[in-house]
Length: 305
View 1 (cartoon, one colour):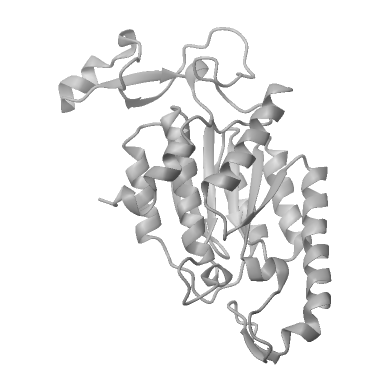
View 2 (view 1 turned 90 degrees about the vertical axis):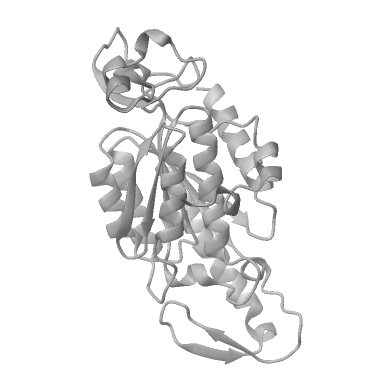
């Protein structure tokens, strides 16, 4: 069993305790008024089972399931189906940056994915996980059971660590669009270092399926400021097979920052056109700080719907 303490810092969890993951666009389902359903009328079609938690309506206990395995499960129906969220985490080579330091982009991403899954399941929503680089390697369907959180942690434990593979978002996002059949919140965690045009084409496929999409771009402080402590030559190594380059960072700082800003501006503009939320996270900040800000913004937007 995966050790939840690897992923959930009690101090961070405590700070996030009052937050909810709000879908900005209308997605399937609601839970006790927490999410607004796009459906009208009384649907009684059975959807799935989930483990009983204190406070559930005892009328929905499935006694046949209890008789088979001596555990309490409740029946969920289509009208009660919660917000469904799939968290897609990049495992490509650039997620290894910065190698040899305390926290790499990949490690920060796993903590971020775990915190989101914890919040979703705590509010009785459905969370799932997908790990990808040029293709989807692991896919865990969203479920609401508290025990399902361990499945997500186990996937993060056993899934592929970042290797020298490129980020290729077009086929990945197309695959996710085909796999996720019910309208959901899709959270993609990556540096998004891939051709912007291809990324936007993949995102358009998700939006065509009426999914709500949230992009969380993880950037290291050095990538944002291009500041280095020593006035000397540095060797830059491409983590996705781009080779090596020895340069004086001061000589290329302005050019680099201009290129980075253009890249992010194009990605942000394309997301705005598709009504996709795009957020950048500085991995030097404590996890609760950007999560609190991002989820608070989404909650305010949801309240204005």
